[in-house]
Image (cartoon, rainbow, N blue to C red; front, side, top):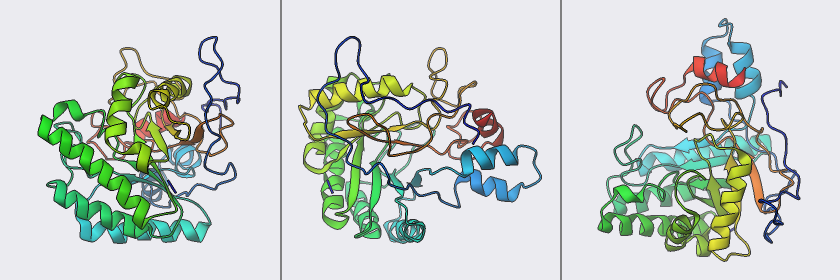
Length: 317
């Protein structure tokens, strides 16, 4: 298969327009609007709340962040571990009657030399890893965000490495289609402030999105306004000349839009965005998601991947 809401942005209507033109013809969302997204008990915010029950910030963080569905990221490059880790999330989501959002983040040289650099050692190791990841999903329903930044960051790689990365993502899509037939797979497509739509469409095409993807994921870990991401997503899909691809948008931290100068590393003054839902009422937009767990640092206010309670509290206020 290929409560305190003052900080939450309002939903978009189905007649959203780009400029003065009507929106391009896009398919209706693939995911049912009534789908229940999985709220994991061990998100960074939930763990912090349990460990700091008397902290004066705990109630706000619990109510506005920990209680919301968020993405489960899989970053450990060990293929022997990822299958069990994925199955654990799948089983917990099944017990809730919910669908998990699973984020693969293990491609070789992910983030290049950035604060989240790492991943599997080479292309062969990634093949083993993604096969194990897919087996962990099995016949369950899941929403997969495939390798955030992997396509947008290919400029940092040599030509040979670029070819290897595109081949790795194509293999990942094909593997998920085979081993996880009831998963919806969204190839990460960066965000509206990064690569031109034509450039991103070309990379997506070469990575197999037209054959193996259900759509594209936008704004992961970023702060751009939802409206801008919809415009960009439509432009990318139009460049792909696709009549079936859709999109999901990370709204975890975009309630106030990007900061001045658009720094992407823990900028101050940001807010939570639209709550996670598959009921978007926007043609071609399958879901608003909190792919990036709010409060998890980018590497500036705290080490990348660690929970920063101060930042989380400011997002939630």
